[in-house]
Amino acid sequence: MSSSPAVSSSATTPPIVQAQALGPLWPTMDPFLFCAHHDDAYPAGNGAFAPAVSLEDRQIGSDFSRKDGWSMYHGDTVPGFPGHPHRGFETVTLVRKGLIDHSDSLGAAARFGGGDVQWVTAGKGIVHSEMFPLLNATVPNPLELFQIWLNLPARNKMVEPHFTMLWNERIPRLVHKDAAGRATTVTVVAGALPGAPAPLAPPPESWASQPEGDVAIWTLRMEPGAQWTLPAAQGQGTRRMLYFFVGDSLRVGPQAVGQHAALELVAGQDWLLTNTGATAVECLLLQGQPIGEPVAQYGPFVMNTQAEIMQAMNDYRRTQFGGWPWPEQDPVHGTEARRFARYPGQADEERPGAA
Image (cartoon, rainbow, N blue to C red; front, side, top):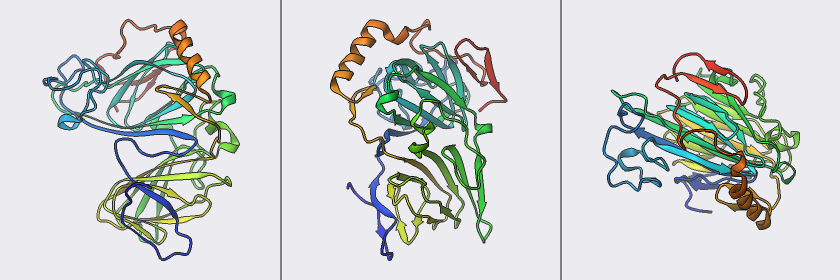
């Protein structure tokens, strides 16, 4: 266990199995592979979607510096992640602020943000880009998102790739008010939550679509002083991580947590969560039944053996996973702050208003 937050307990069986301080990449457990929280205070744009400031002193092409509160990542002029391949797992992108432009080798495209979720099953191979266009030329362009990688079982690692959007307006939420009238809002990206509307369907080949997967992806916002009981996971052997990343302090059952942390919880029991601070608390919950298979990874390829990794690399060199149908590696989808998705072979699906 890495450095732990201040935790006190009076319970015989404490709810927190272990606690780890949050860094740039958050610790995960099977079936999750990766979780990153990007929170970039981008400045005003220059009218061409790029920052209207000098990019000197940045390692362009691989800038994770957070200089002045933001990074260019792998972008040359527009921040973001130009075309790159994936195989053998899924990406789930939850956008809390700002807009992202998606393009992929299937011919799909989207501009999404402000609570929208993009879910991509890479399967046997996909190439996609995720760019962060700075549309506003007179005011800052803040961007905040979670990027989550969810593994696929061996039987599904070579399925056809799949792209879908979960629009903010359709994602179910539970608003619970405790005895004092203080609200906890739970946003249900995946996994049924008692009292909330049924969750939207994840991609068909996802571990989250398998009943035995017991996958949940929820975000929580608790008003100061609010209390809410986190229900037990349904599956025996399910593992659960609660990321406490906004707020002053939180109590899980009898255990007090005094700093932001990734908290592995005992998943098979209900636990009362209490915001013990003076400001709102926000958490991300990732839960799932472990897939329990060997993991071989090389960058954006996640398979079960090193031989399969070599095959993925050879396949990508030979086929480019279907090729890249866009004229540039970092496509941007125009100047309008409209949210839309274009599925392969279909017309645009519009969402109302700007994010």
